[in-house]
Image 1 (cartoon, helix red, strand yellow):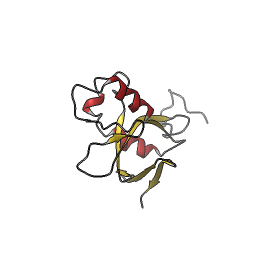
Image 2 (tube, helix red, strand yellow):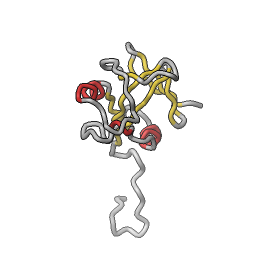
Image 3 (cartoon, helix red, strand yellow):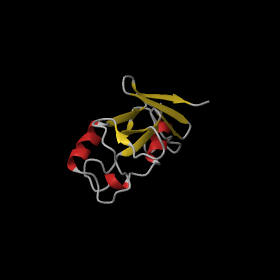
Image 4 (tube, one colour):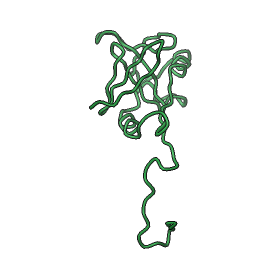
Length: 132
């Protein structure tokens, strides 16, 4: 039976059924707590709290450090939700290119958001594993 708008018991189509959600993230790495994170492309250190934004060359490196995550094909919907809850860095906000991107800062190759553990390796790229 097809569900139509005039059905009294119309049901919501389950999330993920026939649609996708995605988010763009900029991957940064940091080896110690006392250093600024660095973009994976160009390895430029980035002050994410700078209200003046990023220099044009750094924006280009940030775009080259961007990964677009898509649910349900690449990652779970819950991971997209958890990343959406992260704030857009202050330094990204003045840029039309980065104003909706989130920053994932990997400390020694690891980042945790919600119940998800993420890893980044220069050779293997971004990996996602749901925690128990």
